Amino acid sequence: MTETEPYAPPVLETTSDLAEMARQIRRDIIRMLTMAQSGHTGGSLGMADVFTALYFKLLKHNPEKFWDDLDQDFLFLSNGHISPVWYATLARAGYFPLSELATFRKINSRLQGHPATDTHLPGIRVASGSLGQGLSVAVGAALGFRLNKSPNLVYCLMGDGECQEGQIWEAAMSAAHHKVDNLIGIVDFNNQQIDGEVRKVMNIEPFADKWKAFGWIALECDGNDIEEFIGTVRLAQSLLRKQKPVVIIARTVMGKGVSFFEGTMPDGSNWHGKPPTKDHEARALLELPPTRFGDF
Image (cartoon, rainbow, N blue to C red; front, side, top):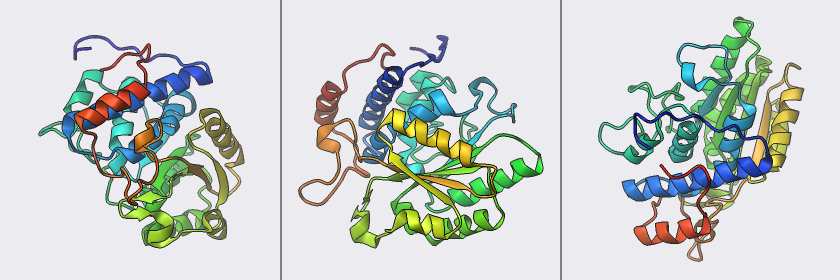
């Protein structure tokens, strides 16, 4: 597809439709990272199901009028290093041309390694990637919605390793204190960070109990089960407007969808920040068969 060709985002009705789109997004991620020979493979693949469900089923959003229409839900990605999955999802949802995915991490591209705002890429409201900051932004946006009497919601995506950061808990405490009940946090809980397993680097368990102690409603689900994730978000939405924020701990597998990228390697490493080689790409795409949506 070229920059000039029109693109209409597909309407995905069934769980099977959503799963096929998630597979396509995984194909996009692999191809983007291989072209760039730089970027974060594992977390991006692991969150493809969550992003697909959000943008094609759950969010109230308007790709064509992203900058002008404030009657939308706001989504913030705090762990900005998994930008490949966000960019691929935004393109598939109609925010910018699919062909632009080929520019990932290139000089002067709008699709930098961490989301930036200087080029005004539709879909991105704040720069992110300096870990720990996103929830503070989300709390502020949610308070702004409340001041404006807006019915819309704010979502903040975070990583489990990121929740070792003190600012996350300052923001969590602030949200509970101010009864920010139009906010849903979603934590990618894959037990992997750049230096190894989260529980070995700095254990954050009992994780759900921590959120509850900070005044949040805490839910848990399988983040790689699209139907279960959608049901959990629907439940979270039903629990809002009761003077408490809600967090969803979405348990995922880093590298999900490609067997040799998944989880922890025998030497204790993982695919947190490594791009695929051309050989990896060929093997990975065999495990992710082509979809009706087509490659960019």
